[in-house]
Length: 188
Image (cartoon, rainbow, N blue to C red):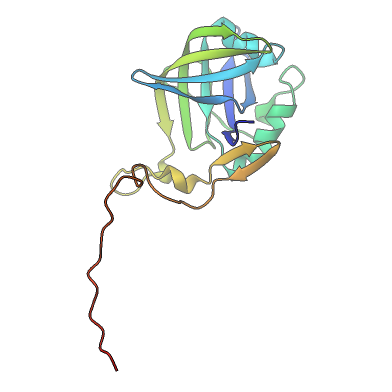
């Protein structure tokens, strides 16, 4: 019941070079230095053996435009079809790992597995981030990245959502308020 969670598309590849894409909702940042993430994958999922044998995967962030593909890649198996082709996802070249990136994704996080924790129904893959690619579409003229304009997708108890309006910024609860000088009004 820990919701909402990110719904991400994870790309992987087996030793023979066959690619697959799966949807993972149990994913997150676990360390900042070194940068590390985790994903939990059911042992019976087709992608599980690929990630376990190669130790590499890519976390591709999803957007509203990728909602249908995100859902489809979570309910269909790569054993039966090429999900890249079925969902018209464009494979791009990762820079530090073998699995492809998804070009329609605003952020592609290339990962190398450092540890596998067998937890029961799922294995937790702890991985170091070895490279991040970002879409130029969300870079401004000064090179600042505006990820919040990407219409990111979240998953909550069986439903997909876009992230809502901004309510504050990091540290806003302890920041001193800025008081604007009041202009004097004339009384009538």
